[in-house]
Length: 94
Image (cartoon, rainbow, N blue to C red; front, side):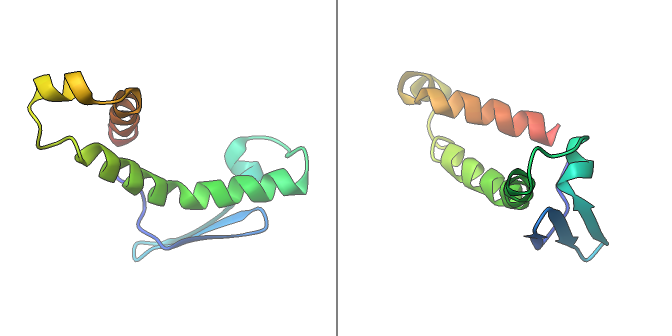
C-alpha cells in the first residue's frame, strides 16, 4: 500500500493533502474519532500527521544503510532500532 502523494499541509486542526489524484481535507478530530482535549493537541496531531510521509522516508533511508551487508553481518551489528524500523515499514506497506 502506498500513501497519497503530497504535498501535505496543515492549518490549525485540519490536514490538507494536495495530490494529483485528488484533494482531501480532514480535521484531526474526525481522523482520531473523538473530541480533542484542547486546540493545541488537535493542532499538534495535524502537524504530526502531515509529517508522517517524511518520517517514513527518513526511516527507510536509515534502514537502507544495512541493505548491502549479508544477513549474518546485519544480525551481528544492527542496533535494536533497525529491527523496529523494519517491522514498522512492513506494517505500513502491507
